[in-house]
Image 1 (tube, rainbow, N blue to C red):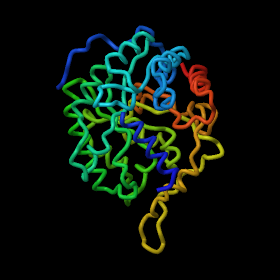
Image 2 (image 1 turned 90 degrees about the vertical axis):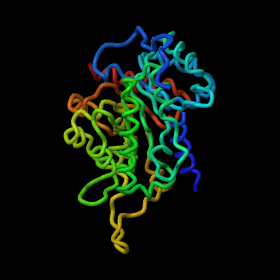
Image 3 (image 1 turned 90 degrees about the horizontal axis):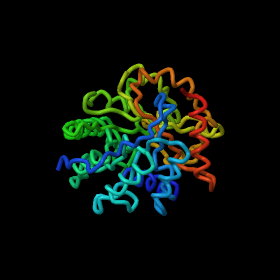
Image 4 (image 1 turned 60 degrees about the vertical axis):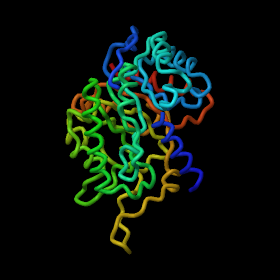
Length: 331
C-alpha cells in the first residue's frame, strides 16, 4: 500500500472514528444561532481542523465561533473514554454552549457495521446515546467498508442499505436519523447506469435513512448533483460544501470498460489521489450559486464547510475565507 493511500485511509478512519437514552444534563443548543438559509447559516465539519483539535480542542472551538460559525459537525468519538479529542462528552457540551455553538450532526464509524465480513460491529446504540446527549439530530456513516474499494459491488451496497435501515430503526426511538455520506466510489456503475449510491437510496427507507451529499466528491466523480436532487427529492437534508482546485477539476474515470475483460476498470487508488486537490469555497470550480436553486428540492436543512486538506499554515484563515464567501453570496 503506498503512502498516499495510507494517508487517505488514515484520514477517512479519523473522520469516522471518532441504553437509550440518558436525559440531557443541559442543552447543547447555543443561543447565538444565526438567521438565514442553511447556506448562510453555514456550519463546519471539524475534521477540517483535526490536527489543531488534537492539540487544543477548546481553543479550536472558541476560534471557530469567533470566525462566525454557529454550528459544527463532530467526528472522532472515542467510545472507550466517552470523549472527543480528549474532551469527555459532557465537557464538550459545555465548551459548545460556552461558545454558542450547536452540533446538529456527527460522523460515527460504521465501517464494520456496514461490512458483511465483520462480526465485531460498532456499537450503534452507544453512538445514538452520545448523539442524543449532544443534541444532534443526525448520526452519519461517513464511509462504507474500506478494506478494498474495488470489491464494493451490488450485494455490498444492498447490505449497506439493510444495515442502515436497522440503525435507522434504533435511532428513530431517540428522534435521530441515520445518514450516509458519499465519496467518489459510490458513483461506479453496475450496469444500466445504476451506481452504488442509487442502490443505497433505493433500498433504504426515507423515514429512517437520509443522505449527506458531499458536493466535492459527486462533482469529482463526474456526476451532476441536480440529477440526484431531482430524482430523490428530500433525501439530502445535509450538504458538505467544499471546493475543487481549478487545476484539478477533471472527473475521476472509474466507469471505463476494460477491453480485455469486458468489465469496469479496476480503480487505481494511487493514481486517483494525484488528481485531487481542495481549495476554499468560492475559489474553485464548483458553481455553488447555481446549486442553491436546488436546496429546497434536496430537502436541505444543514450545510457544512469541509476541506479535507488545507495547504497553508493559516488554517483559521482558510476556513474564514470559506465562511466569508458563504456570508457574502447567500441570504
